[in-house]
Every structure is written in structure tokens, then in C-alpha cells.
Length: 150
Image (cartoon, rainbow, N blue to C red; front, top):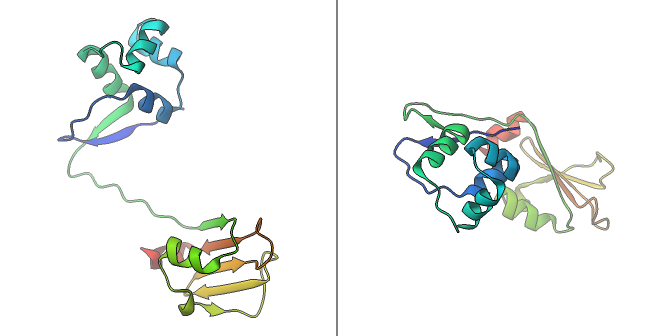
């Protein structure tokens, strides 16, 4: 699996071989094959003991980075989010993660997902336990709730 990194045309940055390799989830041997060098030479470059030539830097940029036009805009939306935190402190999760005040949430009388407590604010649902830290606090947001958070 190879990931592409998008870089603005005006953005200049130094090559961090280990960061690029780790982010792309490729091996040192893969990088050696890409650059046409030995494994020992690559390891020295990754440690900073050898310089990355401009030719190698160009190969890396061409393989892992894709320039985008400044007029290109990427928009991503999330249609559903479900996040669980292993804590009993629902107030802290609501305030620090959602940036909302727990007093604005409505306590609901029925339970879901085997959580004894369920509060909601608009389409944002928060389920929580007061004793079971493994179940902790569950934030559930539908697509509409995700739009509300935007």
C-alpha cells in the first residue's frame, strides 16, 4: 500500500526519509529498490550519515508526493462517527473532545448498546457507564450530527 502526500506548489520542505517511509508503510528494502542503492547506504542516509542527492530526492518526491494545483480543493465529509473512551468522566469527554457543555445535553430515559446512561444534543449521542471503565464513554454521531459539528 503506497500513500500519496499532497504538497502545495510553494511549499518547500526537507526530506525526512524515515518519516516518509513509515507514513507510506514501506520497508527500507523497498526504498533501496526505488532509489537503486544498497541497504547499508540507505540506512546511513536515513540516519543522516549520508546526504540525499537531488536525484534521489526527486525520485522520492515523484513517488510519494503529488503536487496539486493551488485551485484544487479537497473536501472530506464524515457520514458516521463512533468513538469510545475508556473513562468514567463523561463531562471531560464532552467538554474536551466535543467542545460542548454537558449541561446542554438532554438525559434520555431509554438505554442503547447496553449503556445505562444516554444523553443527546441535537443528533449527537453520548452513551456512558458510571461503573464499567472498559465500556466508558461512547460518542455516536450520525452524518447529520457530523454536519452540526462542522
